[in-house]
Image 1 (cartoon, one colour):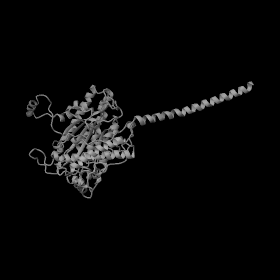
Image 2 (cartoon, rainbow, N blue to C red):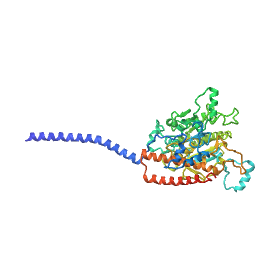
Image 3 (cartoon, rainbow, N blue to C red):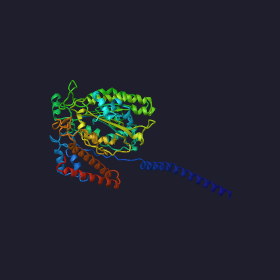
Length: 550
């Protein structure tokens, strides 16, 4: 009896070993699967996700009219559209559809400088850049009026210019507050998500519609950057050549060329990953800055004192230049914002920005140049960023326009592209960073990028009847000192049309996204549709009024 029992015990032991091996194998498979499943649920539940759509906004002849006539958005009639064309509010294409003065609306500026000071917090711009931003916001009065001014103000407020040529905004960033995601938002008008952060370490590009690609891909002749006379002059002087394009220059943080590897004609990227390197990127920017500023805009006469927009652009003329300083961000990471190194770095930026702003001020009066100095995000008191705290999201935007833009006669409306949020500070307006995208697009005569959800900032729009600073109408001053044809009542319809196009574009994107990508909440879409419908009704009623332009 002993031998059978021993044999049975041996079989039982082998069976137990087999079961243990099988359980171990199941555990070795199940644990990774459960981990992956938990990670998937965490990512899909905690992180926002957004699908990119392949659609692009068009500069075709009737693209703006189709947006405004869509029954799903504004619902204008053919007669309304014709009136907007006749009044010069919507662009009208001539010469077989090849020539115009803007894609959707008349372009407002001749050239632009887009200057990023990485991690430029609002308080940095407001309090620590006296030679550049401070000098433009609070110019010194003439000596003979200083005492009179002080007496009138009784010492209760500092001297401040009433000019609209310089404006400082609190520039609210959307999380994640890291550079690559912020640059995506600043060029597409969309909201990149936390799931994109892996792209911050290189290799990412932009797969949504954006103003950089639109600038390169849209006819310069169609947008009014050049004229048919420019083309004729070019062909007569050198036998032809492709001039129906625009030139964009870049210098600074190499994140831009990760996103846009082939779009810049004059490109000088510098490595940005070493946060202990406080000066290399900024030194590179300062090296190339004088040459790029000299090339910004249209051709000038040899003495650089006068120019005429009837002249063709030089071969090296730049319509847009992008500069991205990085030292403020790296000083923050290394030493924090409250350190002598930060004081020194901000002083360097103050000098550089002063040079840029003075160059814009020296633009000939028949041209309109603009510069946008901005931070892509802020920083915490220990110098970091990436999240959504006030310190990380509160960046600065300073916009400055040359004399030829005639901002002092621009429409005096208390409108902004976004509501004033909780981050607004006294005496300064607060806008979202994505609001710059549709605004810049209209300024340059571009269509608004397809996936943009930002809102136009009306206070940043020079008078619509200016092309290169030259009024289409008689620009003699009237008895009140205004330029004839540029009073507020005539500007209001142009601003209203820009806002209507913006609203129609955003609704088109949201509707398409909900249909083709991820269905958006029905209740939210219904509420938005009701708001848009109410606004469209008011707009249509205003257009139908006999005195709509008065």
